Amino acid sequence: MIFAANFKMNHTRATTKAYLDVLAQKLVSKCSEDRVFIFPPATALDRYEGDFTIGVQNAYMAESGAYTGEIGLEQLEEFGIKTILIGHSERRDVLGEDQALVAEKFAYFKAQGFEIVYCIGEALEVREKGDEAVMAHLLSQFEGIDLSYEKLIIAYEPIWAIGTGRSATTEEISSTHASLKEHFDRPLLYGGSVKPENIKEITAIDGVDGVLVGSASLDVERFSEMIFA
Ligand SMILES: O=C[C@H](O)COP(=O)(O)O
Image: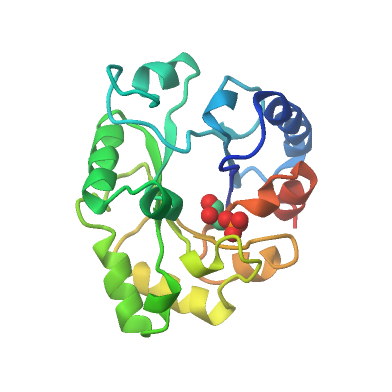
């Protein structure tokens, strides 16, 4: 099982270090088959000791250059970062990344051999149109994406479940994951209001290979509770 924490724009360099010091101790007794990813804010990127992988939430598709405000390969290499989130709904809807840009980022970091957690998800108005509309939308988010890439992990995150405290139902997760898995043979995570109270139910669903957690990952005790649930 994969447990991924996306801090988004939360935590500082100091609080991330304190968090990871505690997490590293807890993960000494982690199940060997499980993997833990932490995506902290860019200011907290560093080399840390512990049985987890540090990933970057976003980066520009270049080694370095005149890209004000961005970080690229040169900055990631300083800390040995080789894992990246791409296509998160907040990058798409809040920061305005269209499918063409998301696919360009994917191609660049794939070429650099990065492990990529690629995010897809539909808005409530799409969900309300039914399963066919949901799948049509989700599959459109694979345009330009190599689904056979061996370092690809996919995260299905219904936008209407992100940060709302209301996750998708077991049936919604099960049916959507089953339909998605007809299109690729890669690990598929669920994200959207995952928390200690629902982690067991969600990770027990066939077709769920792990979770991508936002809000409930910000506290190391709650995130650890999910890993050891
Ligand atoms: O990347 C994480 C997802 O956006 C889920 O966030 P959430 O757990 O706060 O709903």
